[in-house]
Image (spheres, rainbow, N blue to C red):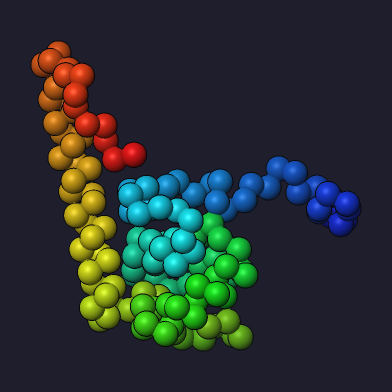
Length: 142
């Protein structure tokens, strides 16, 4: 099917989902908020530390626009949170800089959030198994 630009966007693209809708929200973003493009980029790069990505792939996988990536990328580069790893053709590839102390603290925070969630989940499951569900129990991370 040939796509043509119409008044309401690209024809034939009705079944294509946006990356933001496809991406499952992580605990890190659930706790810290999903509005910040910088946090969305960091979250994606932290979850995929072993690989490097082009800026276009980072924007797509983080669920942000390329325009938002451009403005957020200045912050990441200025603070040394992401680094260029190599070039593939004309595309530059990037990954999170694990030597940066701020990145290491973000990873520690991400791990602490996961541990807190896991302990809350264990407590909730234990209460459900015992049938002793209290009204004043705190919900899992919202």
